[in-house]
Amino acid sequence: MNLKVIKTETEYNQALERLEEIFDAKPGTAEGDELEVLSILIDQYESEHHSIALPDPIEAIKFRMEQLGLQQKDLVEIIGFKSRVSEVMNYKRKLTLEMIRSIHKSLNIPTNVLVQEY
Image 1 (cartoon, rainbow, N blue to C red):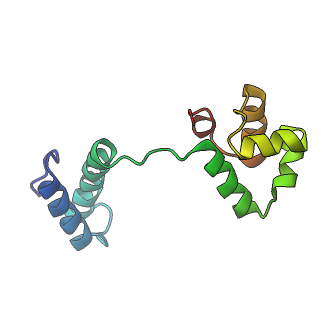
Image 2 (cartoon, rainbow, N blue to C red):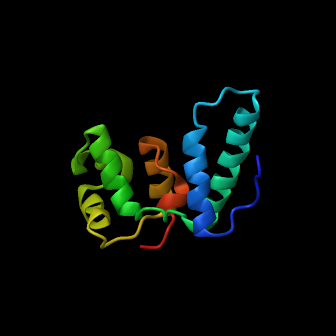
């Protein structure tokens, strides 16, 4: 077991290959320990070099609505008037703090997604 901080894309790919080789290692064994440490090193490298941007707030709302089988009219209870919902969903009106709180509570969308500029 020769583990070190992953600094390059080549080292990252080698680490992924090794992870695949020992993926079924039993906990408490040498390979199990290597698997655990290697997973942490890969996760750290991915966090720094392969980060995924947060989704657009309105697209996140649309996605969550689709997951829940909701229609735009269902947002009236959450956001307010039908015209306000339409304006928000068509990017004509920004989300207010009150709307963000309500959407977060009702649709369980993280606030850090909803507060982004769009």
